[in-house]
Length: 116
Image 1 (cartoon, rainbow, N blue to C red):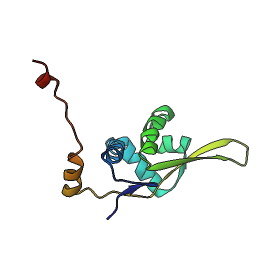
Image 2 (image 1 turned 45 degrees about the vertical axis):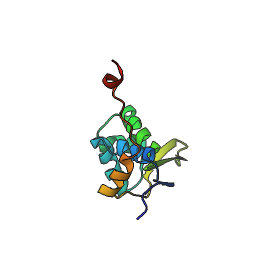
Image 3 (image 1 turned 90 degrees about the vertical axis):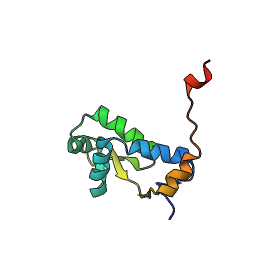
Image 4 (image 1 turned 180 degrees about the vertical axis):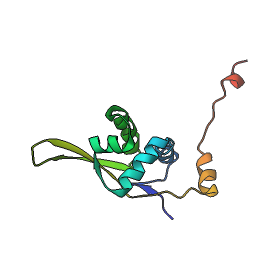
């Protein structure tokens, strides 16, 4: 099975870190749940998630960077610009084999070891 987020096929360690980081906060999981139902414009999404718009934008930035959500600007009938967010297609299967393979690319620096 191939893992992907948006138009990005997850192949490198850094690709997965971006996705794992985006999914590591409960508010971002809540946002994904809301967007799984239907796309939303910013004000409504903030209301449904029960957070401020500035905080919502901070979380959406992480989700967009991981290619889990996308945004579009649209003009309403009244001429008002509205930013909509929608959930991208993604499939991520985390297995012990995947984590084992990803772990081979992790270098942990230990500052105490080299300072003698």
